[in-house]
Amino acid sequence: MPLYAAVVLIGAARFLESSLLIDFSVALLILSIIITFYVLFGGIRGVMYTDALQGSIMVVAMLFLLVFIYWLLGGVSNANMALTNMVNLYPADAIATGGTGWTSFPTMGTPFWWSLVSSTLIGVGIGVLAQPSLIVRFMTVKSDKELNRSVLIGGIFIAIMPTTAYIVGSLSNVYFHQNLGKIAVDVVGGNIDKIIPTFITSALPEWFVYIFLLSLIAAAMSTISSQLHTQGTAFGVDIYGTIRKKSKQKLDQITISRAGILIAIILALIMAFSLPGGVVALGTSLFFEICAAAFLPVFLCALYWKGITRLGAIAGIVSGTFVSLFWLIFVFAKTAKGLGICMALLGVETIIPTAPWPFIDVMLIAVPVSAIFTVVVSLFTKPPAQEVIDEAFKNIDNKGSGAK
Image 1 (cartoon, helix red, strand yellow):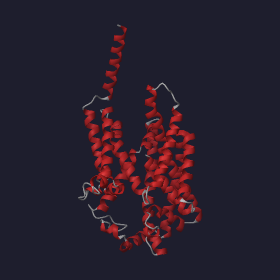
Image 2 (spheres, rainbow, N blue to C red):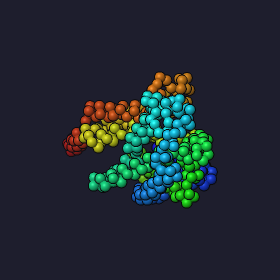
Image 3 (cartoon, one colour):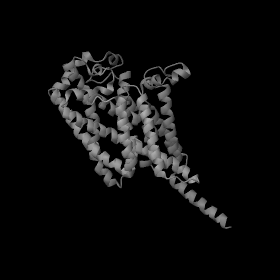
Image 4 (cartoon, rainbow, N blue to C red):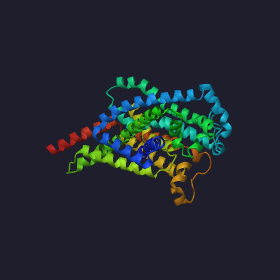
């Protein structure tokens, strides 16, 4: 989770760097201090209230951005057609791996196709459902009635946010080519994290730059605060809470949770300074996929299947996490090459160089494995109800033995 917090911090800091000309390192520190302060003292209630306000700001800003770029480029048809006609400017390295243009799907089965489908579409689209911070939010809802109310709003929100980002990111190529004679990736020197911030700073009115800055910081603060609160709670309640039962020293769990939050933000900052440029999209998809592999089958079984057991859940989480890490370190080309562990240990960049395996994202491999372990182990172990009954009879027998 510190990895994803680091990725979100980088995205917000890059916009501050591009729009306000603030040094990237300074921007990271400012954002970290603000977020840490209100998560530490606001708690879950403070985080949820700020989420609601920040979400409203984000929706308004993204809708304006979507309408503005189509107005700027002469309407929906003209803008889309202009982007289609720029196919001759499509990056050569993307064409070499199966890309066919900004408005057409890549060739099926190619590395580009696998990257788009397994990382962006499936990895982000499905992996987002298993984020621990969202699961915590789900657990705080009072009843199904409140959940049903949130479906419409949540559906609209999730449709607006990524759709706008994808469209604006693509159409920025038209704007930059018309005004600077270059496509977006060349304008930002290859760092794709800067494309949308640079477009907004260059093309939109100055007043909107500050509004969008507010919405972007809102998005970053909302996401990171949720991550930090979840990590702090896990540290203070799950880890220390378990130790506390057996310990004679009873420390305050709130204090321990706050210490966990501080540790999490420090780890996120270290990662943010260490990660290379252009990592936001890849880092987001990888985090979502690892979460999906570890938690999604267990979460779904817990919601819809009464037969899941504690051992089944543990087996699903452990198997999903292990397979994810193995695939990322030794098979998936993007991460295996970047980490270099496979090369250091085995002398090869990836242990399965034959296509398409090096280009298939971890979610398509690890989630089925996690689901199989969750179901199979649950079928061969006692269901929760039976565990409770056995424990009750065990306690009765122990009390009876003590009386004798």
